[in-house]
Length: 455
Ligand code: UTP
Image 1 (cartoon, protein in one colour):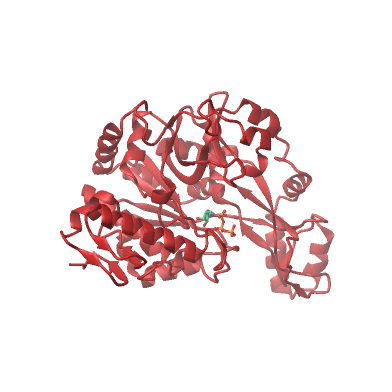
Image 2 (spheres, protein in one colour):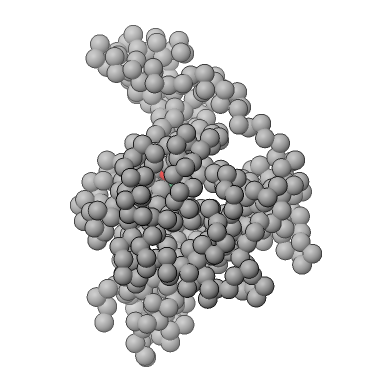
């Protein structure tokens, strides 16, 4: 126990003091001390990276892949039609970089419609389900930072058309943030520790404690398609990715985009001693990041975009006991009370937060696979506040407009240069379903949102 916390408890009224002390008792101080001291930072990344190779993968536009695209699409379609596929969306993050005052899923991102991120992603799920004649259940992870608002928002919007029985919301746990210099737990307010969600890897423990395992068993779900709330281009329940996963008898399949520049800040999926793992960019020594294959491309090419397929049994097996995932430390700005009880809003990182990452589960898989995707078709994450060069709202909207324009033009429509156009996933969610709805001679010369009611 840290003395400043007991001193603080003494300043609180009796009822609050009890609540605060109970909260303190639930904290594993020894564990936090070890994390502050650097436990789980001990991996020898130079040695690991030296052994890292390109993982088993399906590359885009190659004729020598293990399985053909047609075979994968057939297999994935079969799995979807049989109702064995569920979806897993993590939305517990605080979204500090975006600087939006609500859960990120509530961000009005649609470039023309201002559709919320949740709406865009939920509509994708409904559209895929409708195509295969099923309703796909969604397991949605929130955190104490996002839970209440998310639940109220989704209720207010009738779950954007998902049936009540197809939406299972479960809440992840938290970890205390500590002062970077002293390792002391920070206070967010009187009688209140500064807590933050324990990372998307907190999904394993949260899942085990929820009704999800029972529902997964009852509904006979065999694959879970995992994606994140900040990527409106996510190819939710993509049949080809599911199909490759099944054909390869993989337990964990990760979509990846090719890295071209060794300095790109993206975690790479690699093979080390026949196990798949992700090395964070900050852990990958420059000499290994720059290694080239004989054809001149980067050898460690597979940039993770945090879209995965999990074998459901594999995920459930590892969700008990938390899969043993390590905590990672991140330096962040955390508002807190100083010793005199004044609220400090730091302008520079002042604290350490501890997070688990779901991709650290990959090495536990006996069989794993990477599926390369085109970033223009699959990845545009909303991370940064307006004004940033990339990953900002205007940048993501531009990617969405570019994709919609490509799809319409490929289907024979004429889109006047610079015209904002957006396609609701219910109108069409991929090139094929969009093409099926585009009428010959269609022209778009003013801001247009193609929704389910579009003629
Ligand atoms: P990020 O790691 O990018 O974090 O989350 P973030 O909260 O969106 O943004 P910053 O770093 O505070 O600016 C990637 C995905 O993982 C989810 C997020 O909601 C997002 O979908 N996530 C992250 C969780 O569900 N729980 C967490 O504890 C952390």
